[in-house]
Length: 229
Image (cartoon, rainbow, N blue to C red; front, side, top):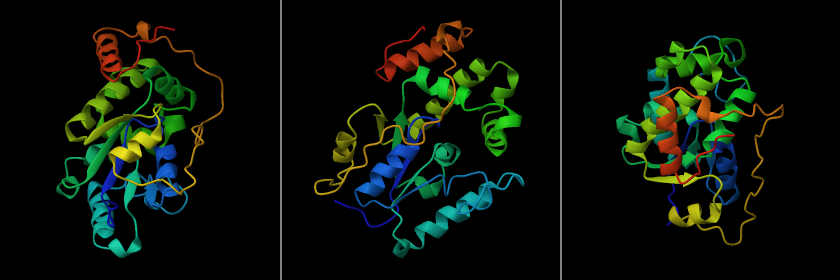
């Protein structure tokens, strides 16, 4: 049955397909924002202005505003930045989709698109270290990406209604969410929000222990083969 209020949050690590899923949901009539409520900048409907992170109270205000204005029609938000707020009371009745992607491809994309550095990440790096200060314990970008993948996903697991691999047939996800899609032109561009640049060709087996073992266990638990090269 189609819900007519804000009821669905899709979240993951970033570079895992949250933008793609937001487009899928909109294509079947579920009004879904992407990195709107859960975003570190002060003007979610305008350009990113690097004037410091929003406060947690500002995030709560955005959530309450949407909850109190169902007539706006918003039904979903897809954002990797929702993770620190999954334990808030406003999230208790939400359906939480834990979106995952093959870790090698995710980590490769994180590094290739300039993540995990202050120079390239700006507010997003500030947001990451605010909520995961462990990232500052190493300067190695592969280690930072491996830490982020394992820790961020682990934080989602206790709150997830269901886990979904972005590589799988999205129609099966819609079935599980009881969202009808017959008669709609289903968004099918799985390369949506892909970024250019050269592949980093990461080798996950070069990660130090115990991180390498943690990532390997998570990879297999999520139904992926453990990649070495």
